[in-house]
Amino acid sequence: MSSVPKDEAASARIVDAMLDLIQSHGYAGTGIATVLVQARAPRGSMYFHFPLENK
Image (cartoon, rainbow, N blue to C red; front, side, top):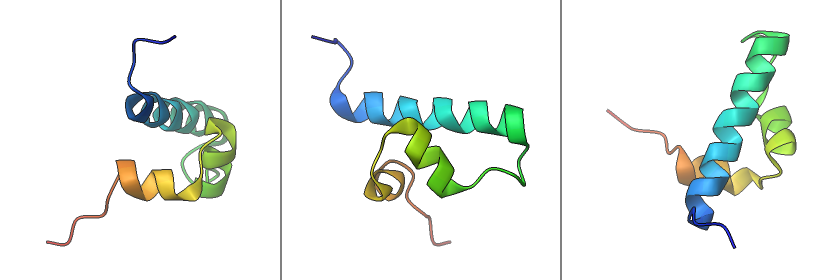
């Protein structure tokens, strides 16, 4: 069993996938759907872990 909480593991997978894709395809060539597929995360995870802020 991992010592990292499940929500932190999902967030870390999304960040790692984003970094890998940006390095290989560039910022303009990286889409949210592709990041979520590589991170093995549902779409709702993106909004849960990285909410939009209204300022």
